[in-house]
Image 1 (tube, rainbow, N blue to C red):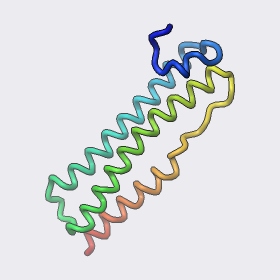
Image 2 (image 1 turned 30 degrees about the vertical axis):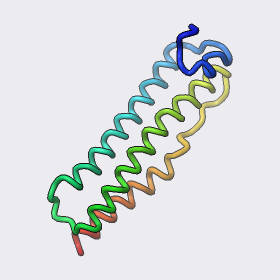
Image 3 (image 1 turned 180 degrees about the horizontal axis):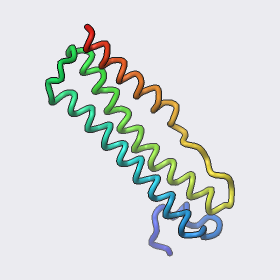
Image 4 (image 1 turned 135 degrees about the vertical axis):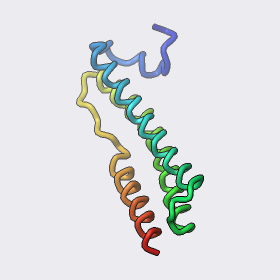
Length: 118
């Protein structure tokens, strides 16, 4: 048990049901997968000629890259907070970055649409 990371988390509370910890891990991996998709979208917008005005395309790509980084942060922070709540028998927290991610995706798509119309 001493080799698990982060030690500060695993020293707290009681060991939860493994099914809940594994579900938490799957959620972490889903956020990582979403992060990779956002980063891929940003890179694809720069690498491919998609018929969108250059300024709008670069702006949208930048938004997607920032969203990819935020999704990776959400993966770690969300996993840690949920695991801590499980160990301390407290209610699970909601995703803290979900509103920012939602606004960011809408912004990136609006930039793309404006770039198509421009």
